Image (cartoon, rainbow, N blue to C red):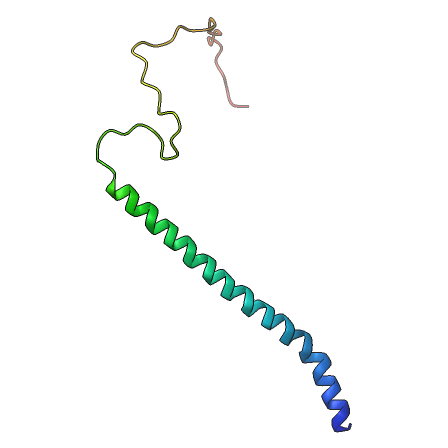
Amino acid sequence: MSTTTDAITAAILFGPGAIVGAAALITQHRGRTDSAAVHRVLAESAAERANRTTGPDTAPPDGGEGAPAPAAEQPARLATVHQFPSSRVRRAA
């Protein structure tokens, strides 16, 4: 084989891999940038939570409605529960 044929073969075999590899490296770099931004926001959120006053805060962190107060008495039963007779002896077959 000639040198030209070897160069063409190498370009065909390694060209797509080099292009995909470069794209993967660019994507990873952008992912690190996004990850740094996420870590910064999480650190700010943690600092805000640490600065809050301590106490019985029943409201969820997203500002929604708090948990309901526990009921003082049990709710009335909605249906009658019938007990089936279990006088039959069950035997293993």
